[in-house]
Length: 288
Image (tube, rainbow, N blue to C red; front, side):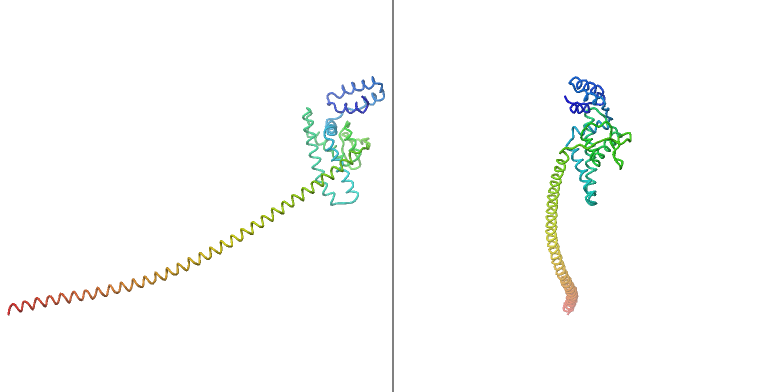
């Protein structure tokens, strides 16, 4: 085991086991003939809880951390270009990445038995944000050997005690790969957005066609209803005329009945008078 492997193993240990692990690894390095490495390892400080969780991110979520650092590169490029529109576009992505990474880190820590308080969660988020803003801080976080949480204060990065840190930039290809991955993800997102837009436009066209068809059907139904109403009105008018004619016919019939009744009454009176006259005449005849 060399010094780098020993340092990684040390900062992967739990906080409770840090001192014992440091002593054991330093002893092993010394036994292997690396006295300088043993001395350097003994000088390494135990990480605070927030620093330990940040180191956990570097070990367990390297791709997500690289995405965050690549986004920091994009922020610096947009700032250098005075591209306000691009900065406004990147800001919600910054908050989204920080929220997700902090949440995932908290879950990982709790699975390993490390409770993450609100204060620790805030310091973790500040550390991740410092990594995004400052390239050197980003490389230090990615190395996974922090002993203190970091915070960007405008003029640089400080640790939890407020003292300036001595983070130094590391050189590797991970940031470049992360930027390329983010570009590929952006292209996928844009294609998905275009597909979603086409789907929405298709749905809108179909909705417009349905509405147009419904309007045609509604217009046809309205016209049929108007025609039916007009036909009904004509029928009612015809029935009204027939009723008026029937009423007139009834009135004429009633007048005829009244007149015939009167004539019948006159005829009956005349018949009675004739019968009476006939009886009187018979009586006169019998007397003679």
